[in-house]
Image (cartoon, rainbow, N blue to C red):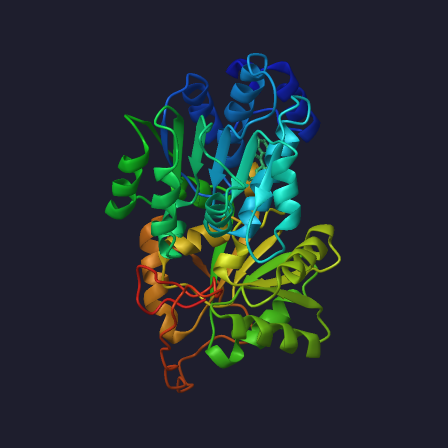
Length: 412
Ligand code: AMP
């Protein structure tokens, strides 16, 4: 199937051709016809599947076709709510790209930066707002944004929203939406709490599921290195010295850990940058920009900061720390092997992390290839250090990277 078969209007097809897209990804093939008919959608899919275009294209098309009927000043007719600044920026950019020949205009709203530019953008008139919940509510409460004309509403990465403690904000936003609207709800996982929330938003939706197993197993070459915690940095240096690693996104469980890896790599003469919630928005955007342009080959990230990182040529994802949330593993490796490209995901696994590996393999329903040929193989002779003390941190109050998540000992 090609995009031409999906009844998409010419100005959008033109933009897709410019982007070099010819064939829709599975989620696009399934969702676009449903959404063009105006139906609600419950989508179980993660970032990296082409999800943004799956909802972006039909919304832009509706707005474009409605435009002829709309007279006078632009009204905000579409709202996309997503958990992180990075994702919001990424989605807004996709709307701009796909809608560049349609006259549909959008803007992005997120916290942590001055609001003046955002308020001015809204005042100048936009059709679409892509926003994170906190700043959106703030601007709504102060009368800068009204949702009364919203016809298309997307709640993106719903599971992450709940993990990050946004449930009350989401409920307040939903309460302000008009009854008559098309609603789209996306989540990488569908536990009961998420299904419950979806029922509050959607009316009799069509369902589309893109299984993580399909997106990961088929495209990404995954392997695991057994290594002691103390040898991980040496192993990372060893791997990064290999020329095949053109660009690597390295996942660290904690912000402190991410900074430490950058420092240690620097000592070994490998330039790397870190991206996490303690960095200012400007510093995060700069690090991301350097990584995208190839100036920085290695980016160290915590999970939440990495959401929305969209680098087409990313060659390697390296799990410096394994995650204890198997779905997060799927999110992580989805950063490589995007939209048909093949990628490589390497995981470092210390003896303490073996149970996490078991959970991950169970979820993706496959065993990772064990790499035995490396200089730091954990032969089980080193006594593991005592476990780190668990700190209890509350999520709100500006620290976006610690979780009130499903698993009590989850830290970023
Ligand atoms: P997303 O899941 O929306 O974050 O998209 C993942 C990546 O796939 C982005 O880099 C998109 O630009 C790219 N992409 C989305 N749809 C297609 C397509 N049909 N063909 C090629 N690339 C695509």
